[in-house]
Amino acid sequence: DLSDPIPTVVSLVGGTGISVTAVNDHVLITAQQAAIYGQVYMQGNSTATTISSTSTPVKVAGTWTVDLSGSFTGTTTGRLTYTGSSTQVCRVVASVTIDPTSGSNQNIAVYLAKNGSTIAGSKQEAFISHGSHMNMSCSWQLSLTANDYIEVFVQNSTALNNITVSSAVLSIH
Image 1 (spheres, rainbow, N blue to C red):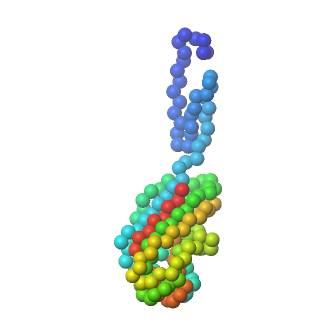
Image 2 (tube, rainbow, N blue to C red):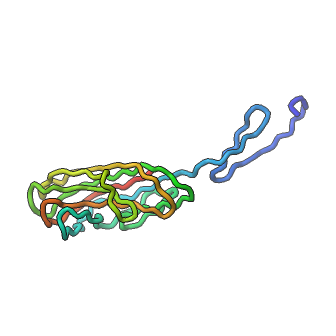
Image 3 (cartoon, rainbow, N blue to C red):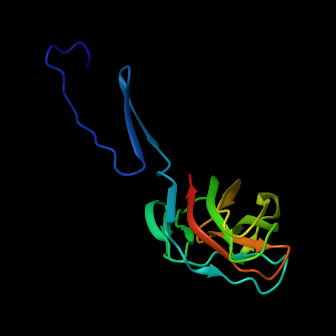
C-alpha cells in the first residue's frame, strides 16, 4: 500500500541469469542470458604445424593457454567448446603470427573451424616468406549449440613447407 506511512520493504535478489527491477508500483523479474565469451592464446610457440598436403587446412600445432571462459571451456590444444544450453550467434576472431619454416613467397591461409570443419568464408590468405613473421586475422559470426567447438587452422597452398604459428589468440563473444 503506497499510501501507508510505514511501507513494507521487500528485498529481492536475482540469481544467475535473473534480473529484478522495480517499475513504478511493481517488481519486474526477467531472465537474462548468461555471459558468453571464451579465449585461448599462445605466445612464443616453436612447434611447427605439419603440412602433408598442399591446399589442405591443418589444425594449428602448439600449446595454448586458457584465458577467459563464460559458457565456453578451453583446452591447451586451442579448442573452445560452447557449454551453454541455448543456441547463440557468436562472433569468433582469430589472430595469428605465421612463419613458414622454409621457402619464399608461400601462399599461406588461416581459417576458423567449427567441429573440425573449416569455414570457407573465414579464409584469409597472404604470400609469406620464411623469416617474415606475418600477422593474419580472420573473424566470422557463427550459430553455436551445446558442445560445438571452434579451432584455428592453417594451410600452405604453395608447397609442403611446414608453418610455425608463434603467437595466436582465439576469442569468442
